[in-house]
Amino acid sequence: MDTAAALDRAAKLDADDPVAQVRDRFLLPEGVVYLDGNSLGALPAAVPEAVRDAVERQWGRDLITSWNANDWWDAPRRVGARVAQLVGAQPDELLVADSTSANLFKALVAAARLRPSRDTMVIEPGNFPADLYIAESVSELLGLRLVRVEPGSIGAVLDDDVAVVSFSQVDYRTGRAHDMAGITRAVHDMGGLAVWDLSHSAGALPVDLGGCDVDLAVGCTYKYLNGGPGSPAYVMVARRHQDAVRSPLTGWTGHARPFAMEETYEPAPGIDRMRNGTPSMLSLLALEAALTVFDGVSMNDVRAKSLSLTSFFLDLADEVLAPLGFEPVTPRAPDERGSQVSLRHPSAYGVVQALLARRVIGDYREPDLVRLGFAPLYVRHVDVVVAVSEMAAVVAAGEQDDPQYAVRTTVT
Ligand SMILES: Cc1ncc(COP(=O)(O)O)c(C=O)c1O
Image 1 (tube, helix red, strand yellow):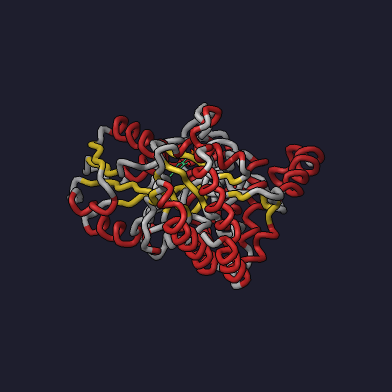
Image 2 (image 1 turned 90 degrees about the horizontal axis):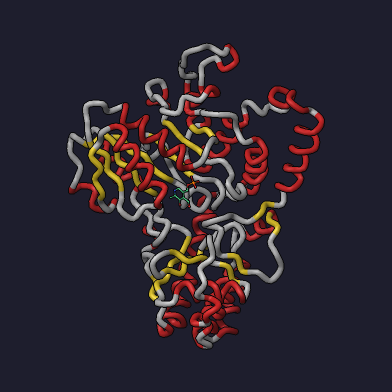
């Protein structure tokens, strides 16, 4: 690689980047190239002060009055309305609560109950394990037949036994983006319901739940939404289903009159019926502050930046990394990818560890993938050049085979 020419090209692309200034809304460590925002988003500068205020003033001084005085009770709806804007839902269709896994459980059971005469649930074989395991449990509990099929081949299994189809919009491993509109239409044509996991798409590309007519959706907020480690997830139920859905997790905060303390459950109207237990207020307020990084930002600009980053990386990878044994598995067609690039390499784990020592942070996914996330709000084209040259340097020096990098950490 002609590094000087690549840096020159990167500088030009960064100068033309319409969302370049958004990087200043984050606190990023000096000298680190962070390519793991698809796993844990970087820290937005507004968060520390918001958390301090939540702890010292709201909790410390206002104590329990904060549920009313600081609107804690309505926070799942209020923050949900902000997330809704980013995923093309109506403000009253989305609630921030629980984990993605718990929300998926609620959404899958709720969706299957809307199609009681059907006995099949369809999922994709390579989805994130949480989605696979939750779907297994739901099918077992409800006595559903579980069919696994690649999203692109959904037509082969759709029939009028299918109650629910549940896929991820962007694949966590390969970064492949699926046709949410087309698949949802096909599912509806056969009378089924579509439940989507947006964990790897929300905040990285324009998501149009309303335009795609999606029935229910879930997603996490700690990746491209930058909510922080373990920040609460969200669940979306389209308005047309809200009066009919029944969540299987009938926690008291989803009751129609939670403070009446009645002895039997009656679901709250609207999206509030998807509430469960008491919200994690500190995390929720951190997330609310984190979402301000999107203020005034066009998701079309974010998508353009994301595709520019991933295309630039793929071009350099062809030239520099392919001869060193790296094979991109992320689709080349822009419409078919999210905001990450994954590359197969026989020593992928060692490569990721050696890169970490060189202050380039990506991650490893089984069985042989180096996974690099290009979070468009703060990753620059110059970071792409650094990442490619460090990857090349690692392999040229054989660092990936150093025994110290063979030891598996708990979290990979
Ligand atoms: C597609 C997908 N679903 C779910 C999860 C995780 O769910 P939870 O937030 O419950 O850990 C992840 C985490 O990376 C994911 O990638």
